[in-house]
Length: 107
Image (tube, rainbow, N blue to C red; front, side):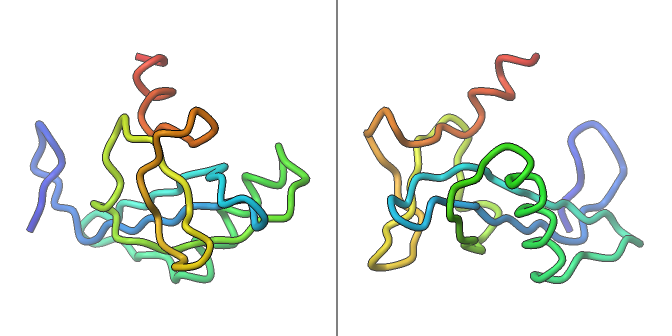
């Protein structure tokens, strides 16, 4: 079982999803949930609802949600959704979202 860095807290599960623009595949939001031992992991529906709630506070775009493995997203990578395959792909495009850049800037 995985533990959080610097602690004895065991990680029960990790889940992730992205909210993306339905027409372009541009990722608007990465939503991650880490459930610690003894906690209750949210359902896919609950996680999706929360991610959409957060996005709709900032964006009026027509969006969709793609669920993915939490470890499939690397910090600092630029991503978009391949609309034909419904798969998250790395993108060299400056319009793609780079995960981790905002987090690094806040530190």
